Image (cartoon, rainbow, N blue to C red; front, top):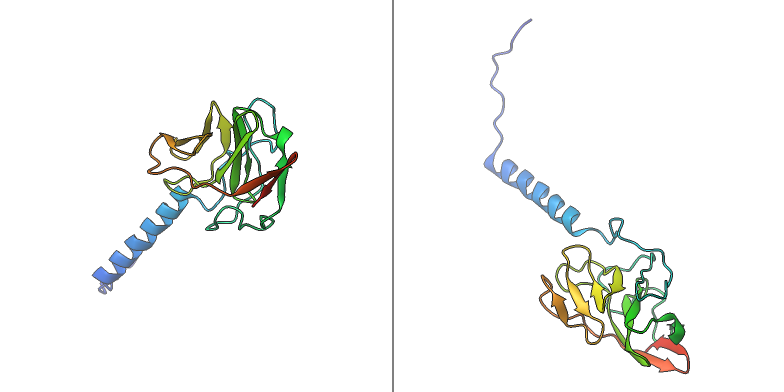
Amino acid sequence: MTISKEPQPALSRRSVVAAAGVVSLAAALAACGDGDDGGYGGDGGDSGDGKNTDDSTPAAEQTPGEAAGGAAGAALAKTSEIPVGGGKIFKKEGVVVTQPTKGEFKAFSNRCTHKQCPVTSVEGGTINCPCHGSKFSIADGSVKASPAPKPLPAAEISVDGDSIKLA
């Protein structure tokens, strides 16, 4: 066995710093997710108990209603599909529709204000983000449990008879 005594080229400081930056960026992106809900998806149906999820995939970086199929005037649901004291998530359209009290319908962005993770459930009077535990009021989108720094942005909907539409 022969061992070479030739000097090996040293890594430059720039190469080491650049590699560390790439690794850090990759780790950060993996932690925040790429729109995949990481297995937190639901059954896509309304169980009638105020707990509801939807497995369609949201379009990243869009405001509520801008995602494909989320055009203004698009029908989201029948009023009977939104449980009193609960709500339903429409990932494709980027909104959560709630019914805090009978006949009162509200809508909010489906993206948590902490790290923009999609919310995945509505239960116990809150809209819930699985990523870091933030919870938002179904009545006004206000923060009920941090780390979310601000309320969910309101989305515009209209109720026409028994139909709920994006405004």
